[in-house]
Structure formats: C-alpha cells, structure tokens
Length: 170
Image (cartoon, rainbow, N blue to C red; front, side):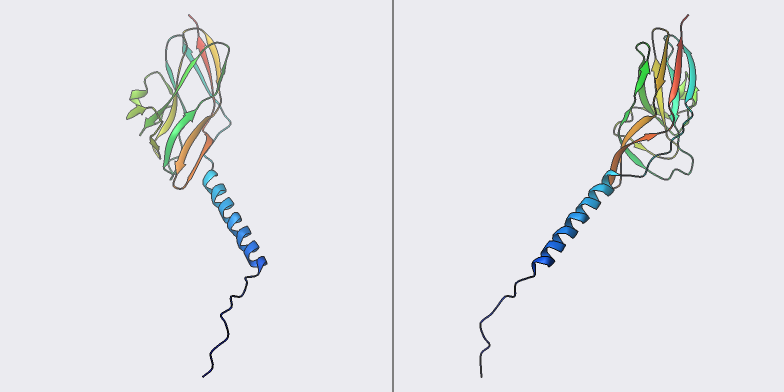
C-alpha cells in the first residue's frame, strides 16, 4: 500500500479574491444607498394662501396625503423653513385622524394635535403648521421636510405644499 504524497494547498487565484472584494463593496454600497433613499412623499407646487389677524394663531394644513397613502412613517421631526419680513412663530404639529385646510380651531377637525417628533404618520393623518405673529407680517413658508424611518429605510424628504401667510394688523 502506498501513501499519498505530502498535503498541498492550492493557492487561490488573486483575481477571484479581487472580484469577491469588489462584489462585497458594491453590495454594501447598494445597501447604504437603499437605506438612505426612501421613495419620495407627495408634493404640490400650489402654496396655501392664508390671511389672519395679529395675535390670532392660524392652523394651516400643508401635508394631507391621499386616502390611498399606504405607508407608515416613524417621524423623527419636521423641518420648516420660513422667510418673513418680521418675526413669525411657526410650529409644526401632527393632526391625528383629521384634515385641516385653514382654521383657527383645529380641535374641530383633528382627533388629536401633537408634536410630530417620535410619532407615527399614516393614512388619515396630516401635518399642520401653527402660525402666530404679534405684529403685521408676511411669511412665505417652504414645503415641510419630514425626517422619518420606514422599515429599513430612512431619510428627510419634502412633503405637501408651501404656504403664504399674511398677518394683518388692526
């Protein structure tokens, strides 16, 4: 009986290692891109136009998705950019199970009105801006940007419509 020769390990071709490393880098890059690029949210170019008296808060619905909105977003915050000729306070709120166009009494239209940070957003909900000024002003509010997570994806996307608010003096 004869014994086989010494054990030998065949070296792996370097090209296979290089191709494997490239494929791994591409897979990781795709996963990062996928996680940071969720589908966009519905937007419109028509701004909401509002007039309100000084010291009277007005609530402006800027993002109310259609009834067939089948996404559930975990909100990390709502970014609002406002340009105005004087100081105007703009506070984003989440209207639970309701829709607001323009009103001074949002409780009539919303089941609950809460700070959107840390909340979930889905069909039947709306993003509302509370706008107040103690002097006459004109405020141009850009579309809100929602910071959110949806499953494995997260991002900050523009949503809804902008607004032009005229605070009228007495």
